[in-house]
Image (cartoon, rainbow, N blue to C red):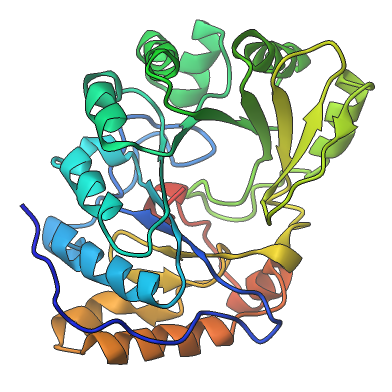
Length: 335
């Protein structure tokens, strides 16, 4: 059960000083996760945020309504792992009803997804991004520190059986063997879907820089010399490629190289309600404080517009300005 705000819509779209219109929200609903992936968090995990500091579903719905009135049309629910939070599917159902939200997606590791697939199909979820780095069970255990590969594979096949659109996100590290990359491209071919290879980024929760090289484009070109880049009609973080004679597509997300910043159309809200205008900033607006101190929808909308307007030109500038000593965990940001 969720509360429905009767406040008037907030006028005015979201745009930064470089003319980029913001139409896409990534909303992290929890920092908890049932995996301990090496590139995301330390072996012992992260210190979870107390529940009272996490935004309630009602608070999140209010924010989505405000942002949708300012031009957000696509919402992606992330974590942590969103399906470890009780009531996630009911929340997704409520989001689907928010005026202005045309497209609703989820990013998940698939460990706990299978019991929810019928509900997701019924509510008309527009797509799932499934995090999967290898189809080798031993490698999966090594990377994720949990032996849940069968559950994740069942989630993939189960979603496709229900005609829920699926993309796979695969993080590639410097020590990722070529055979893992080739095998994941084989999954794209087998199911006729998109597998997107992602440069490892500096969000492992570790001290100091991660040292990832950011040369993934060269690796893919060497492994798939016949791949052909495809034109895309709308802004995307991923470059897409077809391989002659193969089904599906492979993608490249140059998150560490930051070669997509010029068309970035997204903002993030962390589980504790911090607005991030860029993945690499430290947070630009405390929305939880505004919500809990009695700010009106109009005041929140205006503050968001001001924060977004001040966004830096790209993630490299943002990271340099932030000067972080410790890498945050992607689980605490919203993957």
